[in-house]
View 1 (tube, rainbow, N blue to C red):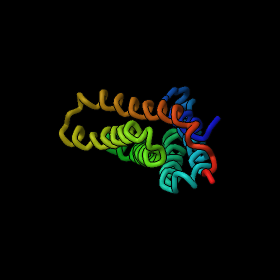
View 2: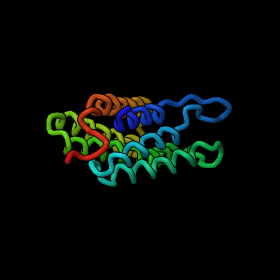
View 3: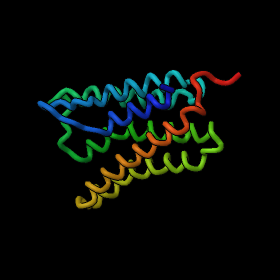
View 4: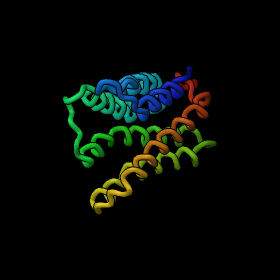
Length: 164
């Protein structure tokens, strides 16, 4: 598999939650390990931003995986802990848009979409619009899955090592 395909696979693990005995069987930290390894392999092309965001997301996911270690009973705290993931998705999409002129528009749109769904909870939670929390969570997952689709489709255009 190509590095961006590994990132997509990792992000799918991150957004899918299957619980058994209090543990997420599809551990988010495993997904972040896949994504981090892949963006590190592409660091020469992507820069360090996506790798740093993936590393922070990995730490947050690892702490959240152990039941009771990182209690997230507050919706605002859950949103704050999701921000490294959003930053990763936005940075990755925008960096790829800069690298791939033919796909620039769609990748920028994916980056902006991930940014918007990451920032909308400020309005939703601040305004007490609790009826919108569910649909907004769905939109956030859909934005990440859209990015995953794009990553798989552009993966052949982003080889592991920079062109000479």
